[in-house]
Image (cartoon, rainbow, N blue to C red; front, side, top):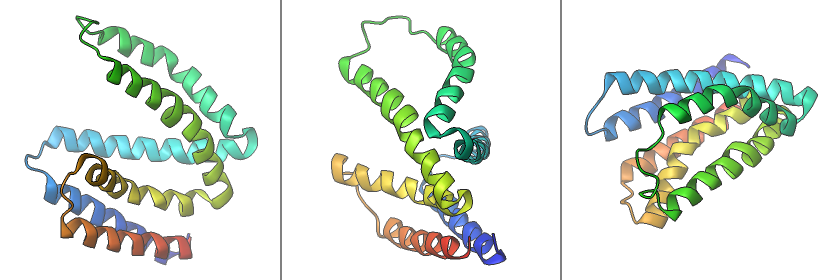
Length: 168
């Protein structure tokens, strides 16, 4: 991507990070560092998955990713088993099923396909909008307050995403 892409990307990412920091009641350096590590690792995973999906297809890429992750995830699941299963209600099980099937399987098929077709750098910029879409849904569905700062930063991020996509 051209230098203007990187400029828009950095400004957009800084706006998202700045908004998140301004909304934090309590900061946790360990939590923040873990979040940065997760963002970097997920970004690398998205990029590799998109490159592989050009050859294999999105369905095969996410299926293999889940198969390869199974041993580590199974070990973590066993290590964190709950003490009591009867405390887990139907909404929690339904949420787990939804995240497992739609977000982590079906959603990734389309996400990898979109990254492969539209370009990893260009389409990946849409991720900057995800926190604000989540906050918007929280406002609409859970009646959380929507501050004017959220609207202003969302506007800035939308402009940055549009600029980055133009110069990708």
